[in-house]
Amino acid sequence: MSLRPDLATCWYRLCGVVHRHGMGRILLATAGYDHTIRLWEAATAASSRTLQFADSHANCLEFSPDGRHLAVGGNPNVVLFDVSSANLNPFYVFDAHRGNAVSVKFERDGNWICSGSDDGFLRTWDPRAPGAQRKFENKAPISAVCLRADQRRILTADYDGRVRQWDVAQGFMDEFAPIARGSPALLSMALAPGDKHLTAGNKKGNVFLWNLEGEKTLERSLSTTLQIHDRYILKVQLSPNGKKFAIALDSGAVEIWSVDVDLSSGSPSQLHTLHGHMMWVWDCVFTPDSKFLFTGSSDMKVLLWELESDDGPAVLRRYIGHEKAVSSLALTEFPQ
Image (cartoon, rainbow, N blue to C red):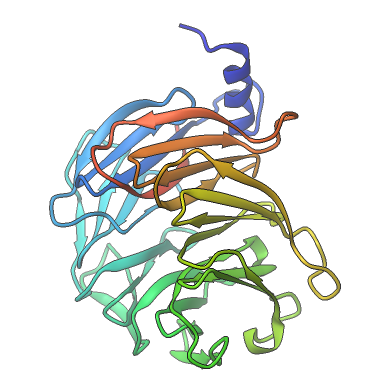
């Protein structure tokens, strides 16, 4: 059955091309509290495979740069699946953490992985070699990690409301001052491509934006503080083009803000509020062209939103299959 014209257009735009020869497939991975990880054809919402994750619910998902491997952070292990094969079992288990592995990132070429845990440790490791390569003690539960563009420095956000920077090669750590004395726990953090902006959200509804251009320290470059909500900011996500960011809330709403402004002289502006979920929205992810957004919620649904429709944001796809809350999402272009 062919797609309706509007959905066909969505598919082509989702890939960022029209009839490109040899185009890869866009795969969406979703994880839930039902101990499953589902792989979907993003264009058709067809579930292509279900992976079992019996140890715990999945805290985070991350595809490798080549799209062939999927890292899943659980409690306490990080496991790797080869989604390019027919094997439904993980091929590697990283078991050095002693708490929830809440955030995982691949180095740009896939040579090593960093993971942060609520056990208070940031670890870097190579699945081709046993054990952790390096470990860094944060002394507070970590909620998110981001790799900077030089692939040498790692940022961590934590429950003490601090952002720290770690130099992997030198073992050097910059401890940035708390955003405010006694700052509430940071629950999410995102870094724009090229390190232009950094954003983080906390459990009291604050979103913070830093302008990192010019190698400013975070303490000196905090440009904007937004009071979005009075409760949890569950996820912040910057778009790949660096022009907007999404904020997922415990109310079930997702706000889209513009950051296409010089933060030294202007402030972000709210573009849209997405109302499609009935419960907490745990995760969201932009497509590579920044024109679409996937959202996952405790209502067991994953939605695909078109953000730049003439009539305003609209839900284009629903991904239904999880039997409990959807906790994490990841997106990749999978090679043919």
